[in-house]
Length: 351
Ligand SMILES: O=C(O)CCC(=O)C(=O)O
Ligand SMILES: [Fe+2]
Figure 1 (cartoon, rainbow, N blue to C red):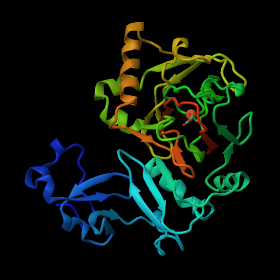
Figure 2 (cartoon, rainbow, N blue to C red; figure 1 turned 135 degrees about the vertical axis):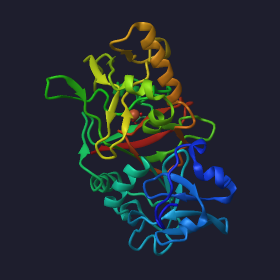
Figure 3 (cartoon, helix red, strand yellow; figure 1 turned 180 degrees about the horizontal axis):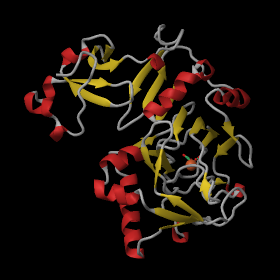
């Protein structure tokens, strides 16, 4: 039996010995401090270190206590509610008067690594300079040709492939084409650790323009078998997009699987192939190296399918005033197309 504060781990229901003894409905759900979820018998959680969370006036689940979820003057005054999202992420709701500038960014940084995605709703807004300075507390800001803040809205003159348009985008991580030279002289992507967004104007409900985030660590753990994962660890891929005003013009060779330094997880580095026939703007071509064209297409198609698999994807519908922090190393993201409307996000990259 597990120790008092040690929660039994299980990978799938089939692997669970506990499940054979105790059907699922005899168990309680627990949210673990590492961002994961598990089930076990209630007495395991009635020890110190876990708290019972109520929702809709009823006992809802247990949550492992985590100092990163204790915020001076905020959580003790019930000004904040936390809701774990599915399949990953943490929603942080301001239930009292709280501004984005009140957030403890050292704790937020650790939570962003544990949950990969943090969504803040109901917080008081600030000005652009104050927002930028607050984000700087999370980590050093990564500047681009256009400065520290990108106004993500329909603005094709900015010439950033189709990022600043109403088109759907390929699944990607930010900074694929932001390069640095590695020690052996190879050009490598140098992606920012975090993307931070403020939603200045959400599109209307029927306009589209949702942002999808895919957890690539979960994808590698649950979506590919062991043999393929081992093969993928040895493969690299080539990607090219023509030079625009902000990036591109250099062919890159990138390993498919990468180790996330902060979480220790294996993560996927990939860019969905985006040929000219599906975009009015500059295309991006992708090819897996060291295998023939048929095998490259096969792996490519499998990855695309998995990147949109609902087991690993959280789809965000924006509300004006939302703030969002995504771990850009662990996650990949894309956006659905939107109809003519005002949709504006302010994006900052931080390390
Ligand atoms: O418009 C969006 O939802 C996201 C666009 C994008 O990929 C980005 O800003 O990095
Ligand atoms: Fe992006």
